[in-house]
Image (cartoon, rainbow, N blue to C red; front, side, top):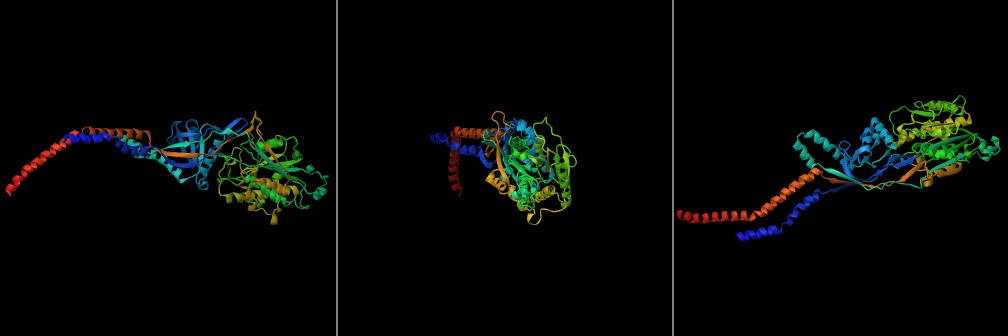
Length: 559
């Protein structure tokens, strides 16, 4: 018996590695597993006048924490855009290791208060350099579930389990997440450039003879309309370019008045569109104005700049169109006369739209301008800006979020109608209550819709083809940064993949180590004492059998 027990124990001893097969699945289950892969967009980065803006880092390999549980630079904060306040963002920017922000599923469904909070946060992010990696992810249910998981678990733990043992058990049972983003740090794009395109309506030769200009159209006073095509916001994309759509619509509808001699105005009507704007300090118009051979700026009547002509996010603000000037215009000047016409026409055609004038002096000590018209005013050209934004620091000017597109187009049609009618009344010297653009020349949505989604001035040549179709003297200029002291600089960036791994917390590893140790010690002692246990069982069994055999004959005799 004892020899058989020893052989059996030897089998267990020789088979000890097989016990690793039992523990190996446990280790595999507890190892990190890929939860999901997401497409993310890196926050934009750019330089203006030597000052850095945007996120400057790219690589993330950190533990994911919620907006309420992160504490150190070893944590990457994963949160919804509408949950982050400006104070939260400033703390994260200074102390966290990274930030992943999920966009809302439907911005239109948010309350006005939340919309305002998003606008303010967006503006804050664009106004400074951010040392940590920042990425944005579109809304997905999977990512929403992960955010809920890391956000709700700590809250439930604190509310439902006050005892230390309960907290310990929940901590062991909790799930954690590890975030990795293999992005590349942005490299300055040496081929950075800002494109600007110009064109103008030139009266035909028969009209020029009647205007008695000697055939030189440059003698005619110039009304210049400018706009900036926004190519980026907090990410390297911009979904809506309403100002560009208004400018292109004005080109199309005024082309109908320049086809005949009788409707040719005694003005040159010029248009300027640049790939820059507030974020780039109106670099395109700056370069264009400073050109030595710029004959287009001769005999300027006034310059009309379009900037956020309609609000992309409705916040129940009064429907007001503001005319921003650097100083109050004097009576009977070109700007004063146009302002009166615009105000009368807006009040006549739209009872709920008002026009107000706001003047703000140019701060020459500040290298960053508030409005584009200040570029022209500094060169002593009469200029103003039409905008739905009352303040130069309004976050509506840089937001990339938008409401329902049909709502925006409806308001753009109204804006184009008012601007076009007021310009026509000014150039033709007609009654402000008459309607020029009606019938075949009426302004419709199709004049605006094709240009709302334009991403760049030269994208698919849509802008270039539109200029060349209707305008004369079309020219394209490119402004490149100086190699030594660049006025602006863009950075190469890519949109990497976000990988989120499901992991257990460190306390779970400690608990698992203890459990495995107890298990292995139990197996070891079972094998080590098995011969004694087997011998004890065998002896007990033999004694029982002997007693049973002895008692059996006596039982038979009794029968």
